[in-house]
Image (cartoon, rainbow, N blue to C red; front, top):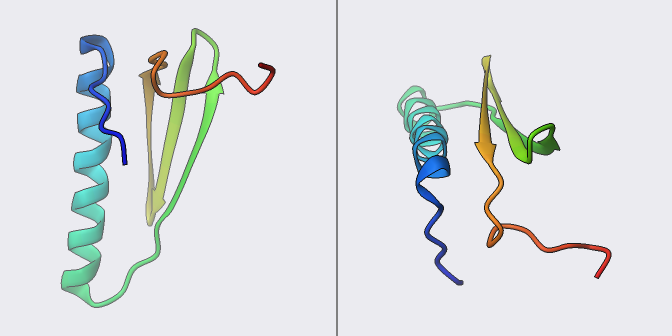
Length: 74
């Protein structure tokens, strides 16, 4: 697995999203059950909308970093 370091403008949003995921998983394990759905899409302004659904929905916009994606057209 290749490790990628995001650009500074994306690092804060990405860190918040990962921290939120960790919080949801740990909270669910403490309670003994949970369901979590994570989805992502590219939105206006070359950002990715990450949606985490686990009881409540949490959304964040993460700037696209050239190292995160590949161009499917070529």
